[in-house]
Length: 632
Image (spheres, rainbow, N blue to C red):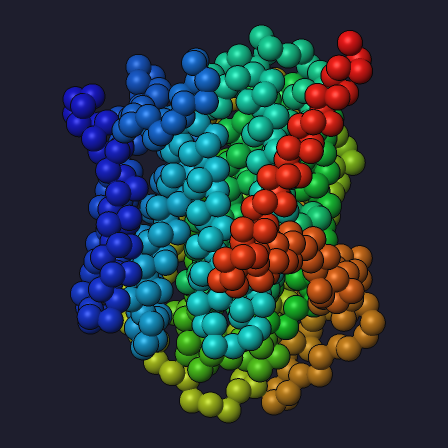
């Protein structure tokens, strides 16, 4: 394939879902399910095929493919902001995940949402989500990246609150939008500061010139990297801006899969990996990234242990796995972090979509304590969900094993991580295996705790997408060596972590940890496995409620931020700033009333007024003249 054809394919990549969005949103009330599904899924098929073709053109001789559409605007004589795309090994991984996994989620969504009266609008929003994410990962400059960044934020708001008739869904959408805006504001300030210091916003130029402009430990890269970390923390739901993600489960299940597996929460990981040239000059911030990831994975793992909603367990699981990616990036193991991003997209999409099929079969029941016995009742879904859990627990042979071991294996020797964070990663792996087993025991073992007949979910579209994701989840780990070789040139500036001096027992402990968690869960949750009762008693202890509520962060923010803001708004309900503006309006109105009262149509008064003004004018002139003569 020649260069011009490759460039054209790259240019059209985000155009297919964009055209689909425009068609669906314009003709929403006129399209049948078949036509709407064909347009939406067909656009994703074209994007996925285009991704495969353009990724196949990357090679040692052609490590980068670019496509410039037009100049957007000019910031300085030497810096133009273009609508242009930049494809290297990193963005190739991302577009493969976004279009590939996104296609399977669209296929599932077409069947899952078939009976919804707003199906066409839903699929339009899903297509727009893909467009925004493709802009984000293909942008060659930070301004275009920020456009895609805000685009995924908008789409998450639209999709989380898709069923806006229920107040809880609207509140969840609003919460996601506001919390992520905090991180987005920090990122915007970081971009302003970056341009002020370097005069550049083209990503490749920034990464190449960062070492020339600054030295390791300089103040400028420290603050810029810290502000960019703020943006990444918001989008990827990491401490302290993680509170929006569990509530995002209010949206339809395909939305949860899209947000958690293929699009929004991976954006923060991509940002740090893409801007690694700046982060490497700020070792302190690299340490912050590692600690943020470690603390988040532990917090999320603890919260997942006590959740009763199957989707909220998976939501906290996502938060925890993104924490592993952040920990890897902070340790300088960039390739391992990106590898885990890819494998996680496979098995987390599988888990969410399989959970959606189970929820559909149970007439939209999501409470784990009202499930049970599904291994016999839904063997197909149970088998695929088990594959997803095996990958999540990182059992040997699964894709999750290869990617998570690639991360854990480099933490001990990393200058910005070290033994403490290695133990945090091991503790996170232990928690992951325990809450995964708890979920499996509650949902699939024991006796059935539901009285409704199971709804058939034998749609071929549902089964097709689930089977393909299961295959990717099992065999995705085989891409490890290939991915590491391709990403090596992208992260060439990162120091190679020497693992040769590590103790021999580290690898053994890392492999054994999930099995220790399984044994512990088998013993501790024995009642869940063998119970024949129609009901299970949930724990309502203070500690359980504390963990169910995300370790109290929502409550903390409510009293520290929300209540003071509401009190201030109540105190200032008349809006003092608005009153100051209205004071000017009052003055203009007063002048208007005075002048209106003078317009009464009596000519003698007009003549008298003119005469008085003329006399006053002459008197002022005479006074000024007398003063001038006196000074002489």
